[in-house]
Length: 362
Ligand code: G6P
Image (cartoon, rainbow, N blue to C red; front, side, top):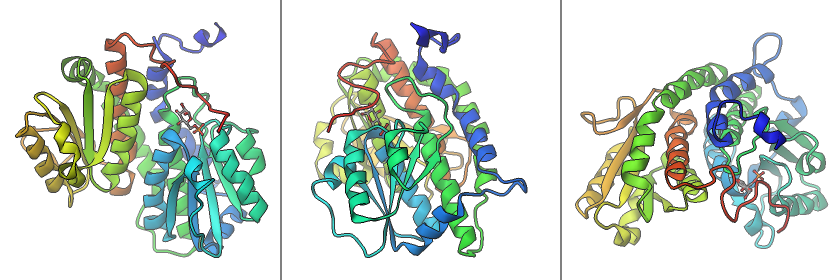
């Protein structure tokens, strides 16, 4: 198999691709910097987004989850209302659009039929569109008005990892370029933050044995698992749960911590694994409170927190990064947990059952 050559010393593409993320973050800064070292994106893209009154992000699967982190960035940094939609829902249940919508398609492969179906409609309506993809010349790239590349290198493992972080990073770069062009007073230096993140990802990957151990002791023989978080952490737990389901087949849910008590908590039994992500100072105490609620119902609670938000060693502590960029670091332990849980269950990590890398049927 020609692909095996590309794995080098790695047993699976998934772990190789997880490991490549620091390099991808650094490469993106290089790719989107001009000769003066400033982040720069094609002026036509920036001006069309500035002229629009709302951004609609359209995507499936992991790309959809990246879209939620992107919404946060576009709204907070660039000050533009942003909605995130599943392609397969948007195509047949189109919401009421604003007058001047701008569409951003997120697609690692650029070939996802559900997303293309929406792009066809968007083109028919004459709305401007931008595809963020890892594959230049892909269908969604050719058919959208504009393309920005993810520069993540080929992603072979079916479960997407580096494309998720690359999509968020490119959306951060795009948001800063829009903000600069609008003359906003800058409160984030995305290039600098991405270089901090590259180092932070390395630190977390160096701790891979912690997640290997956690997977074998608490997840690989569990029938289900829960990830909880609020706000920006809620967006990440949706991706964390998807990743765990995809490769380990452990039934997993990513839930808004505050909503747990309104139904899902009924599923908590003795030793049910519940992993909380806490990177936000304001909502952190609330999520921790929710974690205590499940512990009193017998759950095994694990907390992944941002530096400074742990309480007396109760958490795996992530290196500090900018508040708006936390998905880029908080997702890393969850990728490793999915990988090791799948490995301990003896699954084919790179080719999980029933899944395809790119789905070209609706
Ligand atoms: C498939 C893959 C997922 C991926 C989704 C969207 O279902 O198995 O990993 O997230 O498609 O793919 P795209 O290439 O559009 O990002």
